[in-house]
Length: 480
Ligand code: ADQ
Image (tube, rainbow, N blue to C red; front, side, top):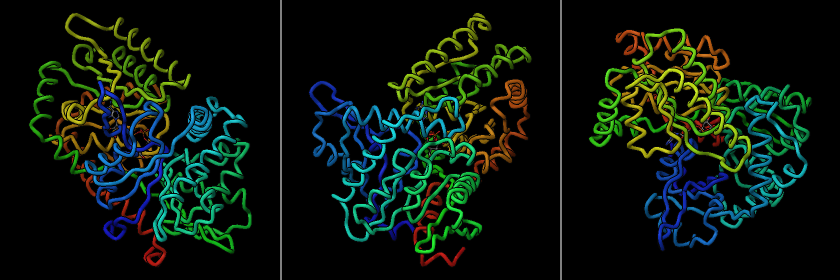
């Protein structure tokens, strides 16, 4: 299926999938970390696509034409940049995207700001993206726009006269109408989204929330609900709405975890933490990831189940993210304080309960951590999907890992049956689940992990793209 879109797809996202930096006199390019990039890279390589986005502000003077050419040779797909001004970044990205949509769509109304100036700039920057797309556009290309920063690009493209098929995928949750209705510009936001031909969400819950909001604000619409998609009929046009759980390249993690370098790193970790079970948290620095509550739950578990002391260690890896947004700066300070307090309270000679790494890991180190840690502790307050949960299972090649997963992660819809589900707001319950995982016998671990791995293997990233592409192509609609 995927080969049928070879060369004919434009992917658009806020950030281009690369990091540019100057080392000495040399400009270097490297791949960026993050869920979207992890999911789309293999697909873009396969279809030799064009990816349009903002290159980032760190390196304004970089020779982009040359760097993009080098990138295309190395990665097998092309890039085109959308330059943004500092004010754009402040108002559209840090402002409306990350201080309005992000918290609101993650059910965190108390953190949500509503400011006219950021909303206005959001619309203008979405138009900038639309103009950049038109510059590159061929007649019959599919334009696939990603995520919450670019909800209105489709509407701006239509306003510029573009008639290509337009698809959109939202990587974060879509909130209930009760929350969505707080947005002062909700009608404009929906008007914009409804200009896409296909709207993709992560879970059935998100799709239902979206359709419910449309029905509230457009009472005349008729909704034809099928198993995989809902068709919204506006009389003169139809919009397809579906849920497509994003995934990972299972084999990349499964095979990657077997490499010698990974085994060496994993051996080193085992030696270092000998005789202990390792819990692992891997997250971008973000208040939605529930890191503070997780640390409190771990603390409560140490208090309530003293056998954990000296026998369990939590390795918490946090990747720096959105470092300019004030909320994220104070979150970092809060985590530093919490880790310090808990470690000071429980540490003994030769054992520290929490090992806290504030940095990104390279692929080998990440795989080694997945492989050597017995228990993944993934407890976001809300998460569109959460790829770390799937990566952990795919890399758990000894098949004895335990997955503790928040019921509010999109991934729980697929993995919930064989993971240990927690409500991250329930510190006591999470502490009990930490103990349950720690004391789970080998047989049960294997049974659960085998099921989890076969679920992730079956529903890998290819399937995500395939399902999305089938939904994009109207001649296949009868299949549903
Ligand atoms: P994110 O919020 O970025 O993505 P997630 O899905 O967990 O969250 O993806 C994070 C990615 O970053 C993973 O691929 C992981 O391997 C990588 N990563 C995390 N910590 C790392 C570290 N310390 N070092 C190296 N790499 C690290 C958004 C949504 C999610 C959704 C994805 C994809 O918020 O809900 O799953 O998009 O749609």
